[in-house]
Amino acid sequence: MHPIQLDMALAAVKWGVRDLAAAANVSMDTIARFKRGERVKESTIDSMRTALEGAGVEFIPEGPYQGDGGAGARLRSITKTEQNKTVG
Image 1: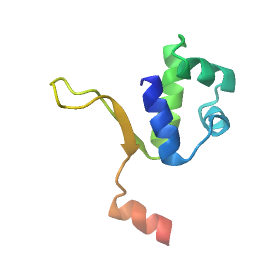
Image 2: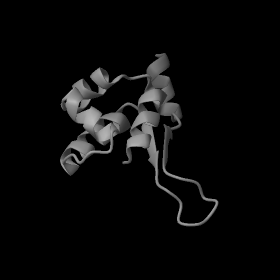
Image 3: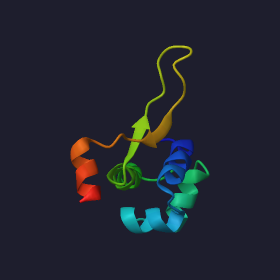
Image 4: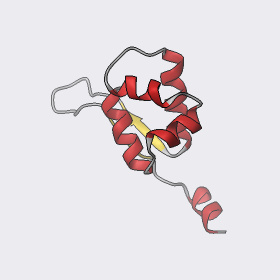
């Protein structure tokens, strides 16, 4: 996960840094350091990513070919089963 992907993911789920810190069990300072491009532990990045994926974010890797686009994040599509759970 790249810092820009974190920003995209937070916007997608309408979370702030405080929300992510609570969900991933990491400090807000650590998240801020990651967003600035500073080095953080891989396990911390994994925790943030797992929390965001649990909230419905899908991370998109950078494409290997010119024109494939850069790394990104989006909301994953909801399956009919998941839809029924949220409605009922």
